[in-house]
Image (cartoon, rainbow, N blue to C red):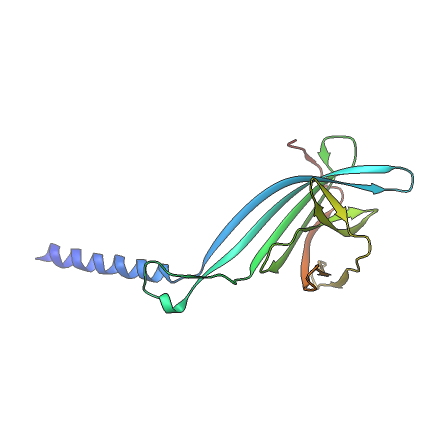
Length: 179
């Protein structure tokens, strides 16, 4: 009799813990890594820079409250994702990456822009097939944060302002290429 009561209690605890964890907000992580290039004019010659872009998209999976307790719960699709991009730039003849930029932003849709360096300043570049194209006539609005990090505001093609945080900008970054 004791075994039956103990088994029923354990089963009840197990079912309760499964029900509680099913209602939590779950993160979903999507990672991509691509290589691109862009060309800049340093005043003397054209220089081709190779760029490796790692994008981590952290989606928060929210479930519809109407489906609480159901096994097949509907997802709330319009959740905002946090996107973290790491850009490593090789701007000379060797195989080592020379610069590293890490920035993040929140968005409902993925944006095809990255930050790259041009003549010692950060600029926005857009995806252009195998290459990146630097957006020349773009005014990046910036504001300094208390922790020496900078936040920039970029207006995308749909007219939405995207605020992104530059978490790291290292111009003396040295990492051997995996190319």
